[in-house]
Each structure stands twice: as C-alpha cells, then as structure tokens.
Image (cartoon, rainbow, N blue to C red; front, side):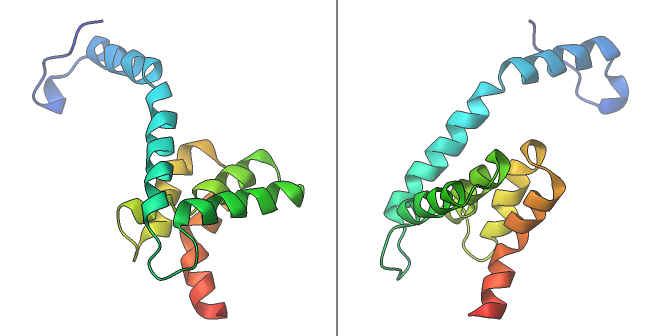
Amino acid sequence: MTATSFTRMDESTAEQWAVIGEETRRNQPRVAESVLSLLRSLSTITDGFATDQLTHCLQTATLAERAGADQEVIVASLCHDVGKAVSVPNHGAIAAEMLKPYVRPDVYLTIKHHQDFQGRHY
C-alpha cells in the first residue's frame, strides 16, 4: 500500500480512504502490544498502595475470572487502571476510551466510572 498525500479533508478521495482503512485494519495487532506495554509499565506505579498497579490489575482480572465473568469483563478488569500510565486523575476515562471499540457499552461505562464509584463508596 502507498501512503496517501492529501493535506485537506475536502481534497481526499474514496480511494485514499480505502488505503487508510486497509492499513488501519492490517496494523490492528499493534493495539494489543501497546496495551500490554502500558500494563507492564504499571509495575513501577504504587502511588502509596501496598502493591504495584500491574499486580492490582492482575488480581482484579483473576477475581473476575474466578467469579465467572465473561471475557469482556475480564479484559476490562485487567485494563481498568491502564490509564494510570498516563494520568491518575482521569485514568478511568483514558482506559475506557482505549477499550471502547472492543467492549460493549455497559463494560465501557463501568471502566470509565470506576474511579467515581470508588470515591463515593470508600
């Protein structure tokens, strides 16, 4: 495939967008590796907790799996704090937006608002 060369949206063609769409589809595997890299980076974040955030995410996903949760909820449990690699105050929204294309709406909303839920119930 060849890179497109338009510089304005109103000058783009359907053929150029077809190239972009195919490249995006073909490169989709990089998303998983990016998320795994972010998860690995959580091993250095404790922020005052007794365990690092990677361990916390693994614990959360394990509990979800043991409770019989479906795969989307297990993935959400694993990745719910991945946004902390970027910003703690809005980490739920960051993680939710990253996973939005891959999970159903209720799972997306759970990830997005888990921090607010914690704040109200602690």
